[in-house]
Structures are given as C-alpha cells and as structure tokens.
Length: 398
Image (cartoon, rainbow, N blue to C red; front, side, top):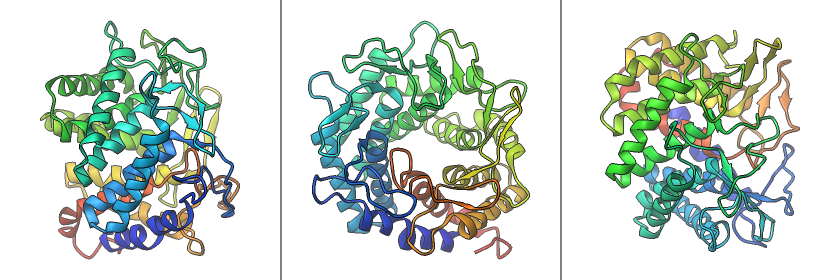
C-alpha cells in the first residue's frame, strides 16, 4: 500500500494539478476542467476548490518536503487572501467570477470550515502567522454567528452580512434544512486541524461539544449510520444513507477525539459507524454511493471520494482493532481505485464508475466539488500510517 500511495500521489495526482490547473491569465486556478480534459477558463472559481487545493499542497509539503508543493500552496494562499476574503463583513465568499470578482457572496459555514482547515495546514507547513490569524478569525465568526447556544451544533448558512438566508443548501441535491451532518463533519475536521496548531481552551471545548453532537444527535442509535439533515431542534429530516460520509466520519471522529484526549472513549462509536458503512460494500470491493430505503432508491455508482474515504476508514478500523479483515478491505479498496478510477492516460481520477461499470466522463476532472483533497489525503494517510502497515507483512497488496 505504501508504494502504491507514494506513486499515485507524486506521479499522478499532484502533477496533474500542477500542470493543468494554474490560471496564467487571471491568477490562482481555473474553476473547472471537464471530464474530457477541456479547460473551462470562464468557469466560476469555488471557495471549496481553492481551499482544498491549499490544503492538499500544504499537507503534501508537510509530508514530502518537495518545494514545488509549497509553491503551489503559496499560490493558492495568495489568491485566497486577495479575492476570497470579504474585507467588509468578514468571512469568505462562496464563489468568484473567473476574473476574481465576487460572484456568490453568501457565508456557507461548510466553506468557512474548509478555509480554516486549509489555512491551519499552510501555517504548519510554512510558519506563516497571517494564515493562522485568519483561520482563528474564521473560527470566531463561526462561533459568533453560527453556533446554536441553546440546542448545540451549527446553523448552515447566512447572507454576506451574516443575516438569515432562505436557501441554506450546499447544492441542489441537498435538503433545505437548518443543520446538516456534512457541515458538522467538516467543522469538526477544521477545528481538529486548528486545535493542533492553536490549542486554545475555548476551541477545545467546542471541539469536544462537536464530538458529543455526533454521538448524541447525528449517529442513528439503531443503525449507526449518520443522519444527514435536521431542523433547528435536531429532528431528523432525511432517510438517505451516505456510505462515504459514514466511513469518513468513522476516522475523522477518532482524529478529533485524539487531539482532545478522548480517543479511547470514541473507539466503540467509530467502529460501529465503520461497520455500518460495510453495508455499502459491493462484490468488487468498492463502496456504493448511497441508499434511501423509504423511496426504494439505491445509487450504485462508485464515486472517487467515497472510495478514497473507504481506504482510510477501513485502515483506521484495522488500527483500532488489529482485525486483519479491515486491512484487507482497505487494500482491496485501493486496488479497485487503481484498476478503475485512475486515469492512466491523462492523470488524476475520474469522477466515478457508473453502476454498469463504465467510466463517467460527463462529470468534472476538476471543479467546484472535484478537488485534490480526498485522494491526496488518502495517500498521505497511508504514508502517515506506514509503520503500522509495514508490520502486516507481505500479504498486503503492493
């Protein structure tokens, strides 16, 4: 697994982004490259994409110390500082026009969290104090405007001026509800990263409260799947199971619990969530996208990000238990990725493999949601856990 991860990261994923994505005309990075390698220079530039590029190259530099990675991270940071930060009302914009002018100025908490995550990583990689200061500013804005002091958790979105907004959704497929699993998961992820570089007592308290929210509100007590959408009173408003989010949460919760000294108490919950995610395993060792039992819907597509999280989540479960079957699942999931999702001709990964087994070239290679974050992180997690993996011996697929 280690050799495969290093090869995939350094020869396929990151080189594609370095070569294809820098926008030499307008600065920063293009907003979109379609599934057939066509650059869309006029496409809007999303905050999620830019934050994830910053995180990916910062994290890669931290692990591998290739100066080219730090150059790419710095390019991302500089563009974000110039264009994405709202100098009047604070926080970051949701999207920009291709020329860097604000396009959608709403304050989506999910997006604010990803900028915290990315800036924390860049500070760790470079020592840049301004990045840390801006991450702390974003944390304080989230706590000021989004934190629900009465019922716990975080509200989903606001106007540019941090007022109420009618459409709270991240995307058209989401339910228009006040609170979501997805935003809470990535606030948890961001606060974990920030706490590592800024161990503030208040931040630690809020991170512990987030872990509790997952344990008591978001994880379904009967199925151990994550419920996805909630009203402001925490009444569940969804019947969908997202296997990728299940397996992703199983290890991100462990990471959060570890930094606040509660790792042992979260072990059981993490394993229950990972076990629930196994329900989505296909015979070819991939992980299906999602299901909705109420309407009889089962999405059998294999999305790139779900497979990435499967590798890390199964690997984490093996480290928690010592049960070799988890490691075999992680290894098999990585093998599925290499055989099916990796674009061996052009580089990077395809968006998904359809239910009929064909490659999906209709969705982006890079775009608002297709970023180097999940697959880069998968490779880095494998490399970071390499000592434990090495003890498993030659039965693990290389």
